[in-house]
Length: 165
Image (tube, rainbow, N blue to C red; front, side, top):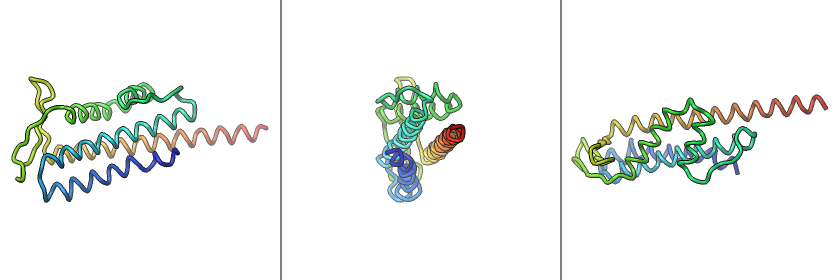
């Protein structure tokens, strides 16, 4: 079961990467931008869930919450150094849920303009989307390294316990 979680965030990133560098290049629509944002959110959620499952397995946390927002809060408590990445996750969720308008659709400078609050708009163009993608890929890689590290430490402890017996 855990092995299923290890590949999913990377698969979402592959799909997002293809959408950014191939699909968006030829279609230039806000629907594609919206889809990429959803894929980045999914990659965040899968990586967060995978990390929490590993932390729970090795008794670093008690339980894993069922909702992605709660899971983000839990991972922030367990690993405070991920705060910058989780801010991006929160920003992506807000952009995804906000009503939006289209700017220069089918043109070179296509952009999605999300109305996050009545006073605050956020413009997501191709360059901003690439930055979001790279930061999300960094987060997935960081959580993967953390999971590997926690697993290795736990395995070493188990090996030492066996030697003592």
